[in-house]
Structures are given as structure tokens and as C-alpha cells.
Length: 219
Image 1 (spheres, rainbow, N blue to C red):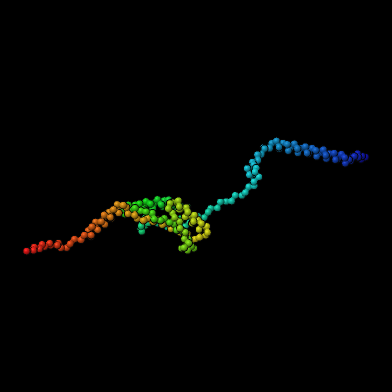
Image 2: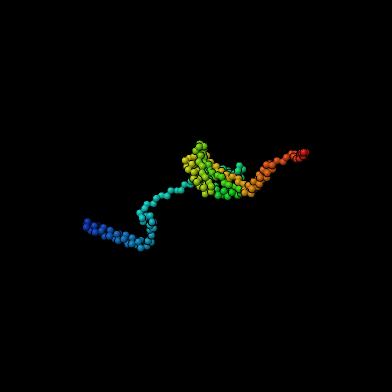
């Protein structure tokens, strides 16, 4: 005789809902506990705030510094005592590389040595720099007085301006001229020599001496 099956009662919807709610509560409780554990074990992070962020200024991307192209020009410098050249330099240089102070010092030494050799006193007559380029007419050449080494800055500022305006073949000619002045001793010697020459020429000697004849009259 087969065993009679015992009928089981089906769970109601209310009991199923309560079971799901209980499971959800347990799941939320586990998640909260795990989150609290992670929070306790976490090392507090330090946030670094820059001065720009504090002031509310946005970071502006910095531009890379571009190297300026050096301005090159042809230089010809010459120093004269009278009509004779005593010192000269000729080269291709860039703005800011040529030492005008060194040139003036060496030029002065050469002038003094030459003056001692000739026995003269050098007197500065002119010191001028002439600036030009290939595209310039001779009437448009620029001149600058360069009486001291510091005056060379004015010359190179003109060169830089010409290069900025895309001028090609820039050239600078520096000419320093000294006049030869005779010393007081030389002047005195010349005056004495002139006086002696004049004394000799003022009274020419007679070629024949005169004879004096006395006439006697008889009465």
C-alpha cells in the first residue's frame, strides 16, 4: 500500500516578502561593517593646495624661451696719428661681443708710443663710427661720435635696429684721428734757428773793401 503524501502548505506572499526584507537588511549591515573597517584602515591623504589654486587663478601654460638670433656685423676700426695708421682691427662680430674698452686702451698705448718716437704731442681730432648696410645710400649713412668706450653702446643699438628691420650686410667703420702737435721745446728750437738764419741774410758781406783817399790842396 503506497505511502500517502502529506500535503504541504505553500508559503504565503507575506512571509516571502518578510524573508527578502530580512536578507536585505543583513546584506546592508555587512556592507556597512566592511566599509567602516576599510575607513579605519585607510591612511588619511593630504591634499596639497598651491597658491594659485587658493587665489583662484588658473594655471597659465608657460611659453618656452626661444633663443634670440645673434646680430652679426662687419667691424673695421683704425687709429691714425697724422696720416699714419698706428693700430687697426677688422673682423666679423656679433652685438655685445666686441670689447670697445680693450680697443681704446690698446689704441691709446700705440698712440703714446708713436708720439714718443716722433717727439710730438698727440691731440685727438675726431673719433667717429659710420654705420651702413648694403641697401643704404651713402647719403643715408649713420654717424655716431665715440669719444669713450661706453659710447659704443649707442653704435650697437643702431646696428640692432637695422638688423630688426631686416637690413643685410651691416658694416661699422670706426676711425680715430690724432693730430701731431709739436712740443714747446721743438717750437723754441725752430724759432732760434729762424733768428740765426735771418741775422746771416740781413747783412750781406761786401766783396771788396773800400779805399779812402785824402786829397791835399796846395795854396
